[in-house]
Image: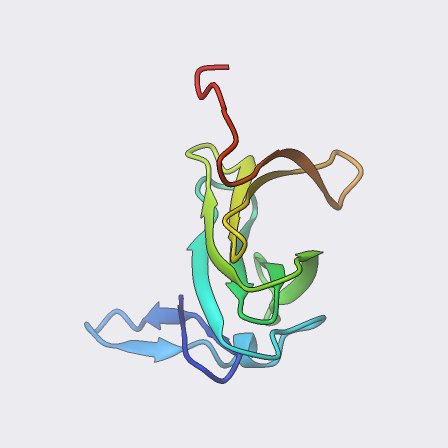
Length: 134
């Protein structure tokens, strides 16, 4: 995925001939979109029956994007709205935890609940004394 200053996330697909085309459906998602610069995009690793990515923006939103197999549309869900810009989003190796780095130097960890939706499982603020091994 890529992004530019228009608040849109772009997903590129290989044509099989060595060239790439933009998946136009991501420009018109079903659900929310960003209203300002998109600062980061991260693909969720692992097979899950659909393509999934997360995006963080200058507008303080984190969106989770899904395109189920066989679907022509990307669906978005607002993971959360933060008080300032979201600089980075990054999935764990297993794709079960999403780390969000906010403009106030805080980092939060999010997990998808069994009932759907997202829950914050940890927050680390600037200068916090943390034990990474725990």
